[in-house]
Image 1 (cartoon, rainbow, N blue to C red):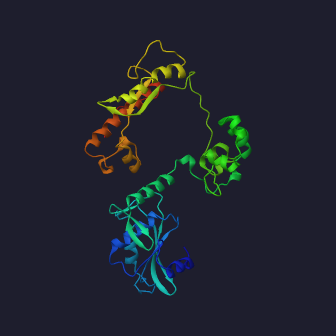
Image 2 (cartoon, one colour):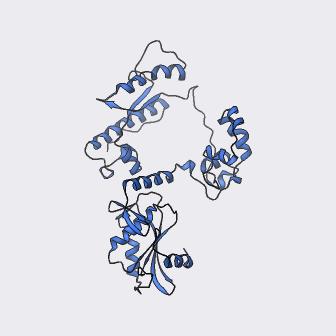
Length: 356
């Protein structure tokens, strides 16, 4: 931010983007302010600014700006009290003849940001701990920004870098029914957005997926991108099926799920393998069933928060008590599934590792 932008903010009233402090005697208040700016609850998508060395009325405190002061403020970024680490810039500036410290806090891509376990937000000119509803809003912002790689936008690209003729003539007819396309009155931007080839913005940007599939020159934006031809032995692309997300009681699927699970072997043989079954068979006895993975409901929120697979959760992630044994069970189930897949695809298997 330049001096003119900072001077405008400094001379204005305190707001959800601006806070003034004469001193740093209470460092926890400074950390709370950094935490609140990083959460950006009003969703300004602009940095928050903390002016240190200025009184509440905007007059200069004439605070000596030393290296020690700058180091103390800079260390607040990574001293472990604010998690995840905020992105801040600490600078000595002279604005309108006043020497002060400017702490610029950028909005976090992974809110909610916590200081000592509490989520702080800006409510107008004041700081406050977030309500449960506000925490949910911040968590939704995190999920919205934490996108898979293939639908991330490419800021340096534009729609002119996509082969729109190829998209209309080849990709759309192969992806959608002709009668649907004939009735479709969407613009080309809306069609690209619906296919995740472009972002949902007033001025859409191509995504990684769009550039890879219909880009005129993918390597210009994604170095190392290439097309690989794959040929697989045999005439079938299936090695079996996995039963997922069933609720279990006493290690058996509950009745409501079991009624549907019982139909899977027959449907799989008739519709996938084109081999009608001569007699009923359960998923447990069906050699095509690779695994039955139950729904570990209590572990999923922990895994999402820690950003790791459920079988790698640790006590530090919240997997304590009964959850510890559940993590071990998940690890064994997924290892068994991985080895079954490796065996059927001819992949060399490594020795069984120790369960963490």
